[in-house]
Image 1: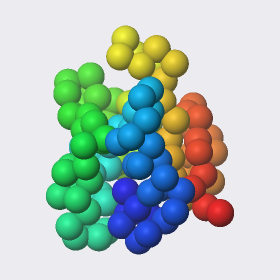
Image 2: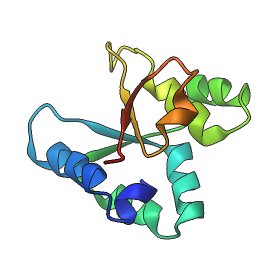
Image 3: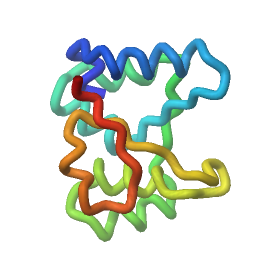
Length: 113
């Protein structure tokens, strides 16, 4: 989310596709949204206003998963990326820091050129 605010071309393309191409879905977890806004104030309002992004709330199951970890943002994102009824194949984590996800059970899309 911060990368999009800094003009990252790949992040911008993902947002564009989610808004304009059928079948493209983009999710933002509430905890990652808070973290992004702390890093770059104004990011939360900007991301929340984009029609192609679905905000994933911190519900009870995700809160329990987050409670076991040290960072809420990564824990909520990892939880959301796991297969679920809504997302049977799980989701891919788009990030400019793919190395931080190396030992986590998620698929990663690096947003660096």
